[in-house]
Image 1 (cartoon, helix red, strand yellow):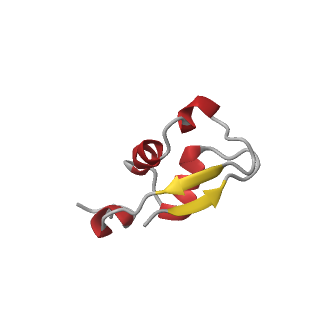
Image 2 (cartoon, rainbow, N blue to C red; image 1 turned 90 degrees about the horizontal axis):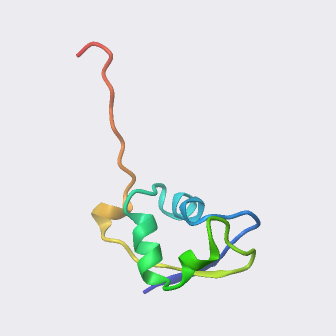
Length: 72
């Protein structure tokens, strides 16, 4: 089931992806696939534009967190 959100002022596809999924890698592409013609609006979406958010697999929906050890 897809969820619909509205673009906020000065919103971009990657900002929407980050806000709703917590990451952009692979998500921006999924949003573009779910919304044919969305890229035609350019980098900044018109305020109030309806954007369909696809449901992602559980593994894809979780943000990837990389742990860094200083003394490895």
